[in-house]
Structures are given as structure tokens and as C-alpha cells.
Length: 119
Image 1 (tube, rainbow, N blue to C red):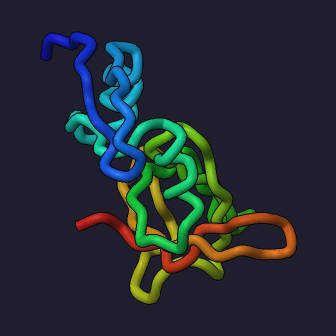
Image 2: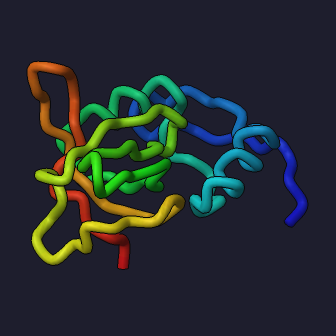
């Protein structure tokens, strides 16, 4: 797929921004869809801290340790624990698996909960 910088408009703040070639390549490398974002980078980071639901890609998960990290669309990572897996979700989740999750504040910061495999 040819990549090229494209203009996009934020649906929340109305600001125009560039969906860069570098961002497109990063998203494609992680397995995200290459649709132009409808939120600017600032609004996307703020949105990712709302309860959700959200979509992400498992960076890694260690079933023996019982925790791992999810990469959010903005590139930031969020922690998840096996206790945050949704019922019916297998305990072994391979790297780069697409998941849906909600965010819950904890004493140690935000954490992904209700983590389920993307259908």
C-alpha cells in the first residue's frame, strides 16, 4: 500500500492535522486498520483515558506472571492483569493479538479490564 501524508480533521476540537506516513507505517506494523483518524493526537490521548470500550494490540502477555501490556492506537501502552480478562477469554494471549478492553483507574494508574479477543 502506498503511504502518503493526508489531512484530517478532529471531530472533537475541529483542528486540522496531518496523518503522516510515519504514523501510517507504525499503525500498519502493529496491525491496526489504516483509516484516517477522526481525533487529533491530543484528543486521541485524552479519549484513550476514558472508560471505553477501546481497541488495542497485545504487546506481550506472560500467563505465568499473569500480566502484560496493550498498545493503544496512540502508541501508548496500558497494563493489564489476568484478573482483568473477560470471562471466556483464554489465559494465553499471543503477542500482536487484537483486543477490546475498558479502562479502570487504580491506585497504580489506569489499567485495562474486561480484556477480550477482538472478533
